Image (tube, rainbow, N blue to C red):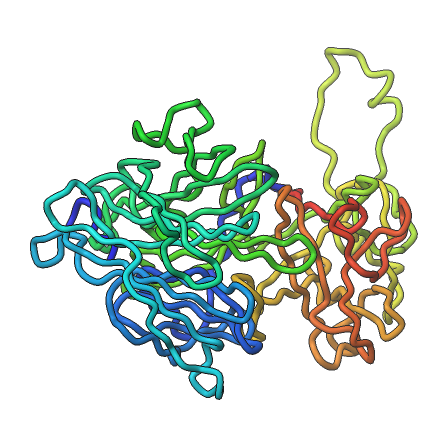
Amino acid sequence: MRCGLIAVCLGFAGAAPAAAQLAGEPFIHDPSTVTLSDGKYYTFGTRGGGLVSEDGWTWRGGPERPGGGVAPDVIRIGDRYYVAYAVGGGGMGGGHASQVKMMWTLSLDPASPRFKFHDIGVVASSDGVETADAIDPAFLYAEGRLWLTYGTYFGPIRMIELDPKTGLRMAGNVPVDVAIDMEATAMLYRDGYYYLLGTHGTCCDGPNSTYHIRAGRARSPLGPYLDHMGIPLLRGGGKMVVSARGRRIGPGHFGRIALAGGVEKLSLHYEADMDRSGRSVLAIEPLRWTGGWPVVGETVAPGTYEIASERSGYALSLATDSVRIPFDVRRSFMAAATDPVGPIPDQTLAQDSADWPRGRIRVDLADYLVRPHQLWTITPVPAAGGYFGAPYYRIAIAGTSRMLAATPNGEVETITAATAGAEPLWQIDQLTDGSYRIKPKAVPGDGRDLALVAIGASTPTLAAFDPASPAGRWTFKRP
């Protein structure tokens, strides 16, 4: 258990995180990195056991991990799943003597015939006298080499190298000190940099926990790790990645989740979810990269937005005739400076919609004029499920039941509730640059994986998402 000191360039401004954050029973402490095995996602926690999910949204208990102990981590290399965990230490029972143990299995699913854990042995230890504490292990496999970090506030964070073929400590390997004043570390490799992320602050005090995650980076896996101000992690430095947010307090134990299409997420636990009796819970958030640094992103919050194309900057709109807003040309262009001024009313939905067709209306991209046919209300539908930290959403013209929908021929249009049949649902994921990918949960009669894409300056459609192109990237802006 993480003992501590106690036994986003957003496309919109001012929005709070979505209230819904994972369904089911996501109760866990010190979760390992979320790992895919036999079509399901697994994470393991302190004291054995863990959680499993088929979609990254609804979680339940069921995984098995022998050995007990605290703060495990999991990594897949080849056909093996390596699991590291600690026994003892952390100040529990008054001591810091601990061992980091390793085991492996061919499947994480207890129902699989390939599920069987094999003990490897001890790969790191602390004797309770030295200023080190061998708990909180975390893996990194990069450029063909396998690394393991461990440690707590009692002493330094240390790194060792393991043999990726056996999981054993490399012969003659000596631990290297890489950071202080942190615990629950994690590592990742990106664009030539090694990143060391660690949890600062206090844990295990519910809504009073001050846990938060900070990072440093280095060109070598052994450091030196520096933060964005050039302060070494060996001197207590670290750039903020995620702190308490909304009613979830005390984030710790970072794990990176790389999904298809360039989408990245981070897993962690919050020490206290104030909407779930202050219990420690698993959470999954978008992971953004800004200036070469990881930072927590934002799941789209319920609200009304302009949806703007990153390709052209034009706004997603109903393809209807524009209704002009009346104004006095002379007062706009020829009035004296001393003439009285007053507001021009916004165009109302009734004015804008007077001539809309009653049936299906296609959509296009057009100059944004803050008109009702360009304002979209985003509503999470938690009962419909979700995918990796975000619920499925309804996207509708504000103040109406006219919803964005995918058509059987791979186009997009709006339909009314009376003609919808099954409710059209959308998956909205923040990308690493802060923009968003918008995907239909399903395309009628089409099994392809499609996303909302601008194939021209003014033409939205459904097509395969290209992470390298701005055509499938969107921003949500408050009107």
